[in-house]
Amino acid sequence: MADPSLIACPHCDLLQRLPALPAGGSARCPRCDRELARARPDAATRSLALSLAAACLFVVANAVPMLGLRAAGRDASTTVIGGAIHLWTHDERMVAALVLCTAVLAPGAQIALMLAVALGARAARPAAWVGALLRHQPAARTWSMIEVMLLGVLVALIKIADYANVIPGTALFVLAGLVFVLAAMQASFDARDVWARVVWADAAAEPAADLGPELAS
Image (cartoon, rainbow, N blue to C red):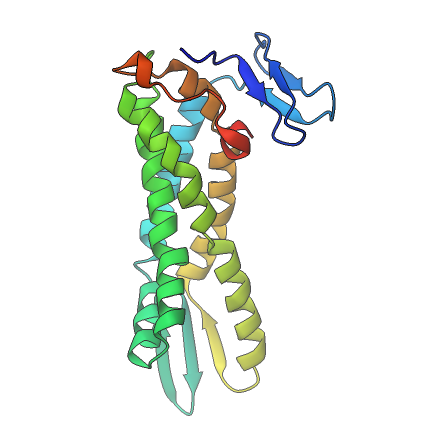
């Protein structure tokens, strides 16, 4: 059975054993001084609250217009999904697929996975499915690029401001807030604590305790 107290430093790969941490305390690598773990009181409750907030913001951000344009007496507005559909119908299918994947599907998967894990982690001994979902959470986070999309939208706004009257939609501000909520959600989540408490149906099939840099951070 894997020892959950063993950890490999994500920066220098030094294998070491974590001590029991007091509430609010942290452990650092003795070789490179990288923070290895931090005991966060009520981390599960905060993660659940932030996951619910992110889910609400995500629904609103995809339900209301993100941008509006007014030019030559004509008004037009679109949502994030509407923009992807517009790109698809105008033969920009690769760009449309990337926008849909990185700005809608991946963030939605990231929030759904985190919400499910946060709900399951509230148990004293989370079930094996919590650990299974936890293994996929870093991949969804990697492909979630709302902040990149927002940066692209801001650049586009500056470029077209001379040709049309740009009207920022509610979704633009909601997405900006969602970026900060997602960052807070990831920062408050203690993946190692959840992983150490998961009850595996088959102890012999329990994965190694080293979750890699993404889950260790």
